[in-house]
Image 1 (tube, rainbow, N blue to C red):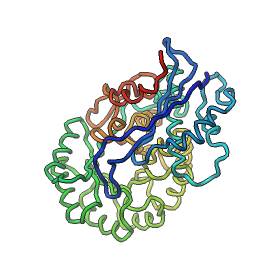
Image 2: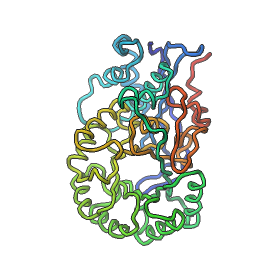
Image 3: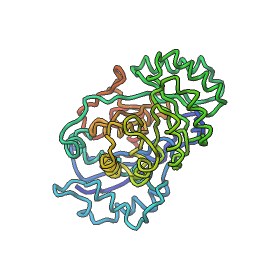
Image 4: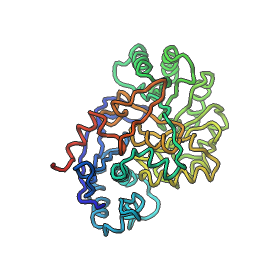
Length: 389
C-alpha cells in the first residue's frame, strides 16, 4: 500500500456566530485527501481529513513541511508488517526535524493528515475506524453507542432569550438530552438570565453545560462559579486561559461541581501538565482534548496511555470537535462521550446522515473508514479531492 498523491484545499466554515472570545464568520478549515494505490471494490482507497473548528486552515504548513515529508519518505518506511499504511510511522516522518515544544498550529496540520491516514487504513482493512481501534487498543471491546451533547447557544446580533430557547428546543427535538451554551460574552446578570431561560427548556441542570472559551481571569471565574453553582450544571467549561494550570487548581478549590477543559491543549505533554498541575479531579472533571487539533489519533493514543498512568479513566474524556473522527474514537476507545454541532460549523459539524441521535446517544454503522461519505454536505466538499475515475 503506497501513497500516490496528497491533495488539500481550504474550505470556509459557514457560521456567523460568536463565543465569548472570537467570532467565526471568517473561519476556514483545511481538507485533505490521501490517495493510495490500494484498490477496494475497483477504486483506489482514499483517506480524508480536516481540522476541527476554532483553528484556521493550515494550507501553508501542509504545503511547505508536512505533505512534502510524507511524499519524500521511502514508501517502505511508512508501512506496517502487513504492508498497510502505518499512521504512527507516517507521523514520525511528518515530524522529522521538528523541535520539541511549540505545540501550536503545526499540531493542527499534522492532525489533518493523521485523520486522513487512519481513514485510509480503516478502508483498506475494510473495517470501521471504531472497530479497528477497539481491536488494536481496547481488547476488542467497544461501546455500542456514544453519549453526545449538542453544542450551541452562541451569541449573534438580535438573538434574544426566545431565540435561544427555540434553539435548545430544536436540539431536544433532534434527540439530544444534554445541551451546551456559550457564556462570558455579556454581563453576569444577562448570562444568568440566559442560563435560567435554557433551564426552563431542558428541565434539569445536569442537562446543561456552559462554556466560557477561556475568557475569564481567576477572580471573574470564581465569581461566575459561585453564581452558577446552585444550578447543578453538567459542567463549567474552559473558564480560564487553557495554559494557566495554577489558576485552574485555585478555581477547583472554590468550585465543587464538575469543570471541563483541554480543547486548546495540543500535545500529550500539555495534556500531562494539565492533569499534573491543574488541580482537576478524576472523579468528576472532564478532559476535552481534540484529536484533530492535537497531532491526530497517534498522539491521542499516547495521551490516553498517559491519563491511565495518572489515574484517569478514558471515561473522563469527551473530545472536542463535534465530528465523526472523534465519534469513532469515543466508541472504539470507550471514552465518556463526544461533542456534537448539529446546526453550526457546516459542513464539518455533526455526524453521518444515517446516524440519528436517540435519547442522547449515537450508534455508528459498520461502514469502512470514518464514514465521511455518509454525510452528504461534507462529502460534497471532499468529493472535489477524489482522483478521476
